[in-house]
Structures are given as C-alpha cells and as structure tokens.
Image (cartoon, rainbow, N blue to C red; front, side, top):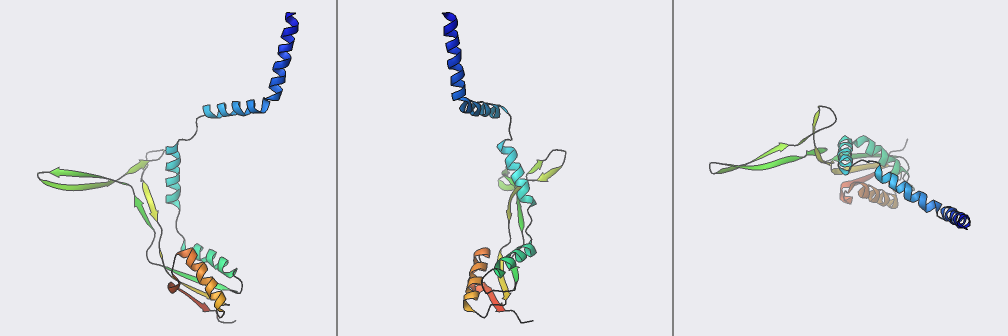
Length: 176
C-alpha cells in the first residue's frame, strides 16, 4: 500500500514539475541573477561622466548632417549651410567650496574635485558640458526662390538650432 501511495506522489510531483517548469526556471534565473554582483550606480555614474566629457562638439559634422537633412526637403535641391556660434564649448568642473573665517574676515575657498581612475592618474571631475549656442545660420539652396521652400528650410533650421527666424537667411544658389 505504501509503495502505491509513494508512486502516486511521485507521479503527481512529476506532473506538477512539467506544468510549472517555465515559471520555476524563470524564478531560478532571477535568483541566480540577484546573486551575481553587478555594476553599482556609482560606477555607472562615473562611466557616464567620462563618456559625456569625451563628447566633443564638432561644428563641421553638425553642418554636414544638417545639409543632408535640408537637401531632403522637397524642392530644396543642393544645399550649403554655414552656422556661426556665439561662444565655444565649455566644460564645468566639480568644485568644493568652504568658507573660512579668520580674525573677523570671511573668505570663500574653492578647489577642483579630482577623481582617481584605476591607476595613479587623477583627473578633474566633470560636472557638466555646456555646448555652444548658435548665433546665426546661412542656407544657400537651389529652391530658395520658392516661398514654401524658404519657409520649410527656416522652420527646419530653427527647430534644430533654436535660432529665431530673424537669424536664419535662406538665399538662392547660383546656377552652374
């Protein structure tokens, strides 16, 4: 009798395992992933800071990319673009400030925060990168004689650069 009950229990257990094998595998995979040490948020933030600091603004690449986009506007034809900047790219480094009071006068001291990456090299910690602002744009294109093309080009340049329409000039390209 006991053998029969034992075999029934084994059959029921095997049936339950077959029925719930996928949720059980997902649960076990979750447990294994939870036990594997991953990257910390601090390491991710440092890597992100390094990546943003390595990003360099390339005006000529932006101009080429915008030329390709603008030439795709219906009726624009060949396009040449020149962008002017009001200021260059600026990197803002993380600083620590402290106020020192000595014999009745207070002074504020600031010092740049350095971080040590891997070896013995110290590099300044980047707080943010301030990209240059556009001052104006000149677009020379084949279809500039049509008002609809001029309007589409001005709207596109304005939305990509943040310039107002009064700072964007669209003129006709001379024929070849």
